[in-house]
Image (tube, rainbow, N blue to C red; front, side, top):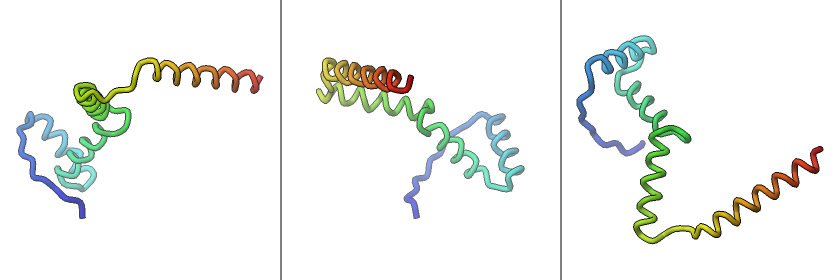
Length: 91
């Protein structure tokens, strides 16, 4: 079983009402609906996940853990060269 933590928060009444309507329609409880919404928000490529990635990146920078720009540019050039070569082979 997944470890759980109790979280208490205040939400706008209209938002809770919307969650309740979804819960009723799906025959689920409100907690399940809110959990699904939060999981989607934190999913790959979503706003929450992007914000978390940025926060982690800033923390790494503050600790001096970073990749030199030259290494990043070299990797980018290599990827571009590989893509160009693949397109030439495909044509």
